[in-house]
Length: 139
Length: 322
Image (tube, rainbow over all chains, first blue to last red; front, side):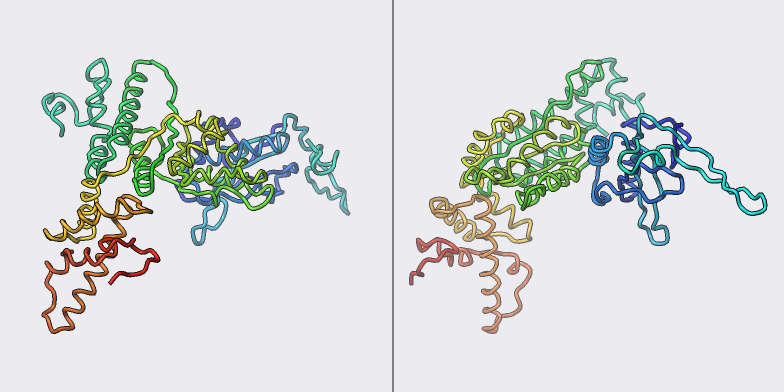
């Protein structure tokens, strides 16, 4: 199951040229671009591992693309996303985020039904990959 | 509006050099690029340096012709524009390198008009594993523009085999080779030391297409530089002052630690000091406040007080002659 999340979740994965254009847009806006990595892509897992520090003082997207290539080489079978942080007062949050790398095989999620008193059912989702193996060996 | 476009009144204000002639109008391409203006500025603001200017002109021509070829569907690939500037101290290497970014940007070779100037300290780390991130950081910052490495020969320290400089060089080489479209690297340094550097790093020498040598300035050029620098600071020499400057240069050239334009600039700074104290003590002796003219003028006594005229070296630890 192909996991989608972030700004361009409705699109096929972006090519490097498309990524470069998006990143250049972020740089021109003055946003700090960071790279994050995880092997636990649960939709409620907002805190991914940072891959190096956010890149604050770059002028051109080629520098970030270099770092993305580096991240892909280090974590070929992890989810990698880039985030753009807008530090403007009262915004101060991530304003753009999209996935730039995904594992070759994505087993997907299953629906977990938990019985509660009085025939109540609570639903949650659970990743097959996360349950099957420990962190670092999941994909 | 330029003459060619003015004669053809049917054209819109924006002249597309490809569409208008069927072929490619190099002259229109040249005018549009604004290179002419850059070259004129270069001629105005940098005295001498004929070989350097002609090399820049060659590069400009190549990039324009490449554009024209591209319009005809002729390939060729982006030319490698990594450069090496060698020359004695004070010959304008840094000044030209900083200017280069502007030129390459106007020619459309680099995407951004910025220079990241670094030295050994910014590239080479203190301990194992420190160098690569530092070098990559500098490279990432420079992407899209020009990376200027001043005193590049310091990167390689043959006397210490565990020096991390070699690691920085290897990362540089890799990026210089693989990301030619993203980055122009300019190395600068004194001639003899850079030659040693290239001899011990043949990979570096072969990846740099343009080795530009900065010649020493002639005394006449140095005098023009002095006038230019003075004018930029709103000073000027009176007639005796100019003669004194000419003499000063003739003497200074023969002395040790001569650093071309930098020596001239230092002499000028010291002359300003002497002019200031001259005016100040004149005011103490009851003279009227100096007018605009006097505030601007550097005269011969401001220069002739220099130790250079007494056979000593400026700003050196020499015994003063009385």
